Amino acid sequence: MKVVLTKAQKFHDDIREKIQSLGYEIIDHGAETEEFTAEEYGCDVLVGLDPFKGSDPDKFTNLRLFQATSAGYETIPLEKLRQNGVMFCNARDVYSVPISEFAIMRLLEIYKKAPLYYKQQREGLWQREFRLQEITDKKIGILGTGSIGVQIAKRLKAFDAVTIGFNRSGKEAEYFDSIHKIGEFEDMAGELDVIIVALPLNDGSKYIINRDILEKMHKKSVLINIGRGLSVDTEALADVLENGSILGAALDVFEKEPLPENSRLWKLDNLLISPHICSGSNYMNKRVYELVYDNLKALTEGKELKNRII
Image 1 (spheres, rainbow, N blue to C red):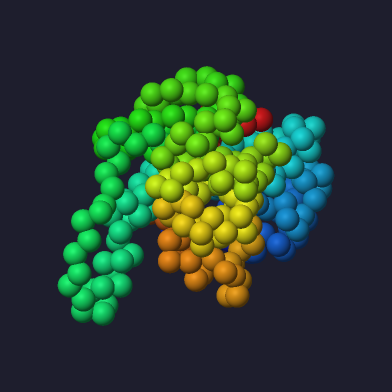
Image 2 (image 1 turned 90 degrees about the horizontal axis):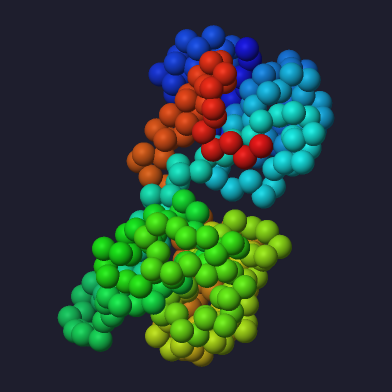
């Protein structure tokens, strides 16, 4: 069988040899914006991030499996793959641990006034500020109770937080003190000390953090978005941060990336900005490689695939 590996994920020699040992012929493809060649369109397996940007899924003649190296799949043509009988697996769980650690780090930075002390260190200032916050007993609303949300809640329980989850079904999830349907979020937003957005992008999550929600939040509340940029109305967020209506916020994702140099967000002292890197980890590639190898092996053996969506 032939497997196409796109340039979106670098596969080192050791994992390539393991894949070849399963009987696969590896074909390397360049940038995912480049259309596939005739040979590549004849592959049995496709591994990549979002490889249909520059190619037509209908042109694949033998494709049995598309293995994504990302957890999100809102841009993947699922219905087209389903019609063509192509199985699709995402990279659920690969990035959940580093993203959850990043969210906790950002919350602690805000609560412990880390940016203030970073600034004082650079300036050689010894000025003590004891008005810091603990996570203890804080009501933390986590929008999205999938793999990432669960890992965030798991870590927050070690800080004695009250974990409140929101999802579409209201179905229970581990490490949450309570779960509510997403439709209840608007009415509960004002009761929450922290809101963490960990949702995929869909019609229900677009601008779920809007001006109305932000204005319901209290002066000591915190917003963290490690989900999708379009879940937060950043203009409305900038307004409430400038007014001091909430304590602070941290964004790793944005409506437009890269964040424009002239964005007013850069100048907000109570906003922590990172360039969509919260999934980074020394274990990230290892987990991707293991998932790809395991699913390629399962395909050859006719066994169940991990993270299968269709």
